Length: 357
Ligand code: DON
Image (cartoon, rainbow, N blue to C red; front, side, top):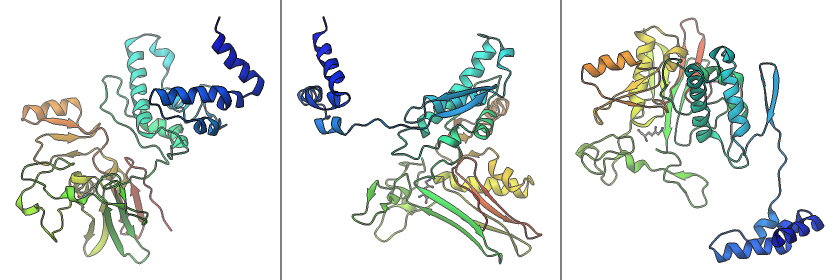
């Protein structure tokens, strides 16, 4: 006979939710918490209220699927996976075949990487739900699935993702052809994590851009020596690369990026893509990038930058590798075409945007 449970259910039956979140049951929970070092007190229980929220939906092969949105990740992740899978003839793969399991796990890996990065209580974090469950995002995220091999991957960047908390770049061209390339930084996410007393902004952690000791890497793995040692009044070494490019005396491109030590090589590769590889601005920014910074002595590479046979050929020359699933810098660029057309591109690796006024 479960007499304690019976008494709890009786209080519930007699007083509804108040019979649980207040009164004897609440008092017993709070007392238990206090005894065992927990934190929940009676007022927490009293303040608890369920929240009714809109479900998330998609259409999967003609079936309307309606499920739970944040703070569950369930509906969002399932819809994201279904949306990616709808590009495939799943039945054709055959239940249980190795191709089927490979496809499923590749789609699952992508959704769970995004779950880890973007999902949480929407009352506290701007979860980009609509972006995550959009068909356009599923198409983009699913495009990197390789049916032959496991991909290197990290979280994607869905439309509507909150902007980053550390470094920002603006590339601007106005109607008169004036250009601004502006990178601004508090160094890493939330800077020093201290809000200046009563001021409402974060203090930076720019000291990490100095070399603290010869040969000791900073957060970006960069090393330095005396030239960048800390001294009173001295400014720390930056990797910011806000850049303006002209041709025949006329403005052509405005380029820059956040990305710590990888900013420099990212901006340069976009420039090479434009000038040498004759890509459009969009392609130049989106093309997969590599990075090498002397030490650590390996090629950092983004998914799709180095197919397996290229890695083998480079390894034969003595190169080592480290995948960068979260991408190499975020480039924001603007172009003034010779006929006066202005083009703006926000890196697809980021939540930024291009805009015209
Ligand atoms: O000035 C620098 O090189 C660094 N403070 C930039 C940091 C940065 O880009 C962080 N962002 N991703």
